[in-house]
Length: 316
Image (cartoon, rainbow, N blue to C red; front, side):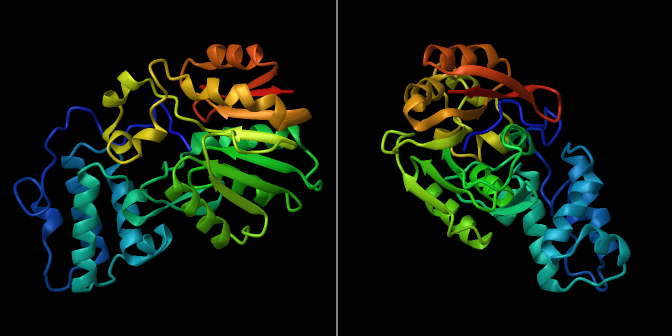
């Protein structure tokens, strides 16, 4: 899997040295060991520390951290502010909050992320799935309205397997193959398939795009690296410092992976088969031209939640 070129920022820019939890500026969030410390206390202290570190919506973020620490829902956090924290819970809360203030995404801290209503385990070899990638799933669903056929899907650069497994969750007779150049990513996707009860219909392989894959697929999806190499240092730290660089780097113009994939698409797709790929900001025309040069017909473009063109759809 690959990332977004402009994922929503997790904090305001310009915060180079966020406060520590137990030192100047962050003492309120580090008041561990208090007699009778409660959920309400921890929420207030964490929100203050996050606000001081420049995060927007600090109370909402503080609630998410505390819910993860206590393994409670947001509703339960709301309902029981008087619940006392144990010493171990306070220590865990302080440790997670410190990591979040250092700009580590909460999904990385807890090791999982929800995508398409499903929970996915993350690893160091996988991107952190983001909501905008759901536009690829939606594009396929709108073009394959009948959920009953035994379709064959291929996911190139599968990462956590989120695109393929989301599709398999919608098509109960379908099977699919996910390919990733990172062995760790393929192993993580395999684990996710098993945890989601889809392991008997999902197969994962290590490979360089589609070079070792035989054709006959009804649909191919991809979320390849599309960040120009020179733009990677400018990405938000939540992406730049925690997503694997090979899954970010799309070459000098961000289009290197699309050229490699497009060269193999015709033999992979059945006649009338669909290809849907996530793209970066402003890449729609360039990716469409690459696909057309390799014999595919451009079907449509799809937008993400912010109205930005995020997906190119083509047919054989």
